[in-house]
Image (cartoon, rainbow, N blue to C red; front, top):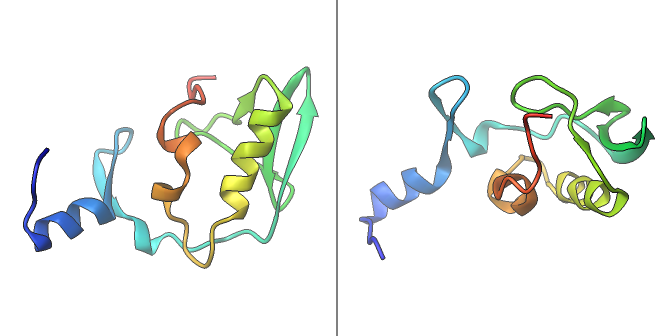
Amino acid sequence: MRIFTLASGISTLLKTRCTLCSIYRPYATRKRFYKGTAVIQNDNKWEVTLDHRRLKTPNGNVLTVGNEPLARAVAVEWDSQNETISQATMHLVRAKLINYSQ
């Protein structure tokens, strides 16, 4: 187990590495930009929508999953965010249980 000093531990927890753009983005600066979430079926795939806009992957593709329960779980993760979006609380997205290359 690695032990951090308080200052470096906090900065490590508050930043995420974006592999596509090679920069660090703090979690706290991402404000919630949507009011509600929904799940829709499209061509035997399920999609999550934020204010009727389809959720996209970091690559810019529409996020699709193969079954409704997983899509609903992702929608609940997004819907449970408060004023700021904290990826640390979105375990399905963080654990990469969803294939972003779709």
